[in-house]
Length: 355
Image 1 (cartoon, helix red, strand yellow):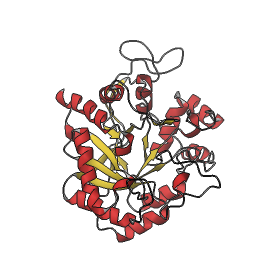
Image 2 (cartoon, helix red, strand yellow; image 1 turned 30 degrees about the horizontal axis):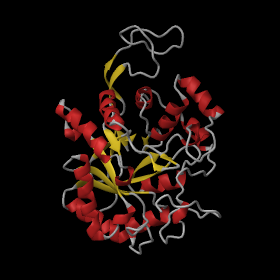
Image 3 (cartoon, helix red, strand yellow; image 1 turned 180 degrees about the vertical axis):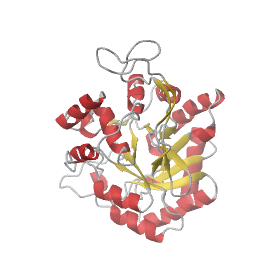
């Protein structure tokens, strides 16, 4: 599924650092997490004939006791612009994140400098309160207005769960919602359409009953939740898979246990001269999954994209798979009585942050 594999337009290999054996740049210094090359990212071929960059920058800023975190002082806009300088071309957002505007502003700044819109891949998502067929295209128009773009590259149904405006459960079938997604596609508002957070049974029904087949499935994937069965099922049926929350237990999360690493990751990081996080991202890439890491730190922007100069062995991929604990960090159990809730129920669901 991945093609045009990592290709270097210029390779600056002068010598290796005597301290850590990483390649020095032409400037004579070593920084293992900075790109010493001008890099063209590989792309994923979609089932509709289009191509999607094999790494996306996530723009969900997280969640705390006050709800979804918002960007301050155009911080995200500046991160987007900087990320384009580093080499990112794929940006993942959603209506509910409240970040479509600043993502669009960051992209617009670079378009003015000469970056081609056709080189940018903009992914956003339909929120649950707009699941009626006639609401879908209108919601996408709102996302276009917010972002300042004239089309979306990939539009995803964020959840199979429909909600009313007051967040009570809607009886709208996700197949009705999908008809609205197909309408938006026919109108030319979006180039490719797909779904997020669907389970295998829901995906099977969608594939069986749709006129326009989904191109992408976006799900939570990390070492504590490899999702090997669902990933294989989707890929065998021609869908590209995107993986959000790729770092799993490696990073701090509101309401979650303290971050931890694993000796498997540490050993592979040492072997390849990379960080644990880079090993995880490469693990996803080597499984033909498009990772969606998120960060607002410049050094992490560079670190996360610098994963296309090494490749894991098959047994190393399997070693990371064995870290599976079936742990979800995105588990909206407050919706678990909805008829289209895609995950397992738990005994003590958390209160809804949406009121």
